[in-house]
Image (cartoon, rainbow, N blue to C red; front, side, top):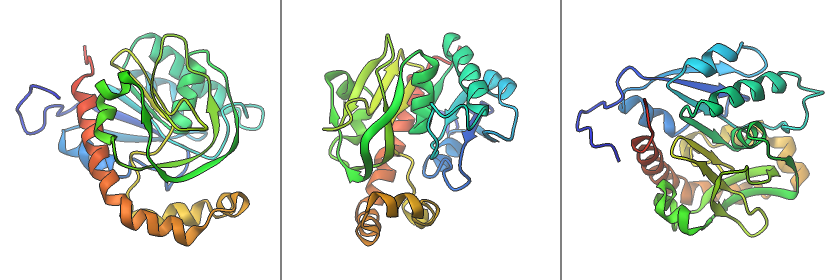
Length: 243
């Protein structure tokens, strides 16, 4: 945690948020960043030019989406997005990737990203490595998190594995203190979860997901995840080197 005791310790610092779907936004992370004083600026992948905003932001957050990192032929903007990410990561700038965002970070660091064996969608707990239990992810221990992915990736060279599930070993990784990749969704916002169920209706149907059961799990577990996710984010930000 930061030793700065001011109410808004990062007043004026900018956050560029790269968004791939309109309803997958910062979610429960938004009020945390606002309370800490960050100036949040969204950029739409495939629409907005990303190079300068990715490079200049004090903090970069790359969010999730339904496409694969390996689908650059169909979605050419991925080439520029990965290149912009790579330049930022080489400079050691503070960067957080969630789901597709974590996969893009892995790709930019030279790791392979590829389809998994099945869709992992729903709430379940993670298994943490020793490094994970020493990291900000310790705030999620005992809290079921939201999984919503079908792709996976190899652990990038120089990265530390922080968390796993039975079928997907690379659920979270860090590179130093300034780069964090999360395959799952700690930013899920319980009150707005229905947007995900509507927006991903085709994916859910194809995967054979029990939508009423998933909705009920959100009612039961969503608020707990929001609280744990806020602690995770605040702790991680406190350990970032902003120089």
